[in-house]
Length: 153
Image 1 (tube, rainbow, N blue to C red):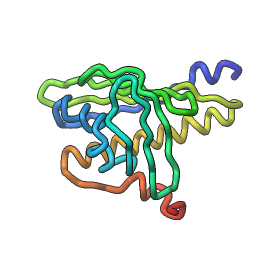
Image 2: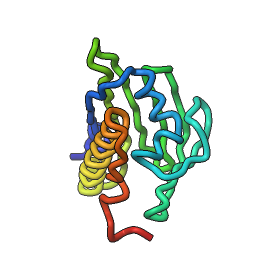
Image 3: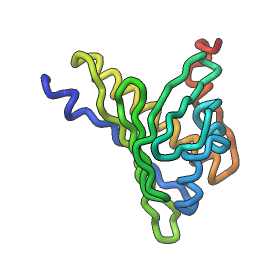
Image 4: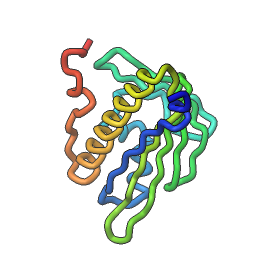
């Protein structure tokens, strides 16, 4: 288990029945992202920018560096805990976009890494479900806010 941090990568995906440009925009534009994930951001994702995301219902925030942006193809960010998140956008003929989210770079002992991978897998799955409901059906499900209703501040 000594190499656990090197091989522990979260990988979740979902088909979103919308064009790739619309799905990509949902992650770089905080006016859209706040409908299904965080509640506040200090800016749009652009390569080289430092961004802050807030989850006001929990009183927490995260700082991130935008490492790479490939329009309608890929986003790579690094959070302030040194974990990386990569979004891959693959257009599907007449079916929309397959989006894949990878999260890696977890640190800690084996138990801590396993718990981070489990939490991240569940978290990004919820984000994709919320994205799908919002983009395909214009429904805001409040999944992130309702995940821990007793933690609201």
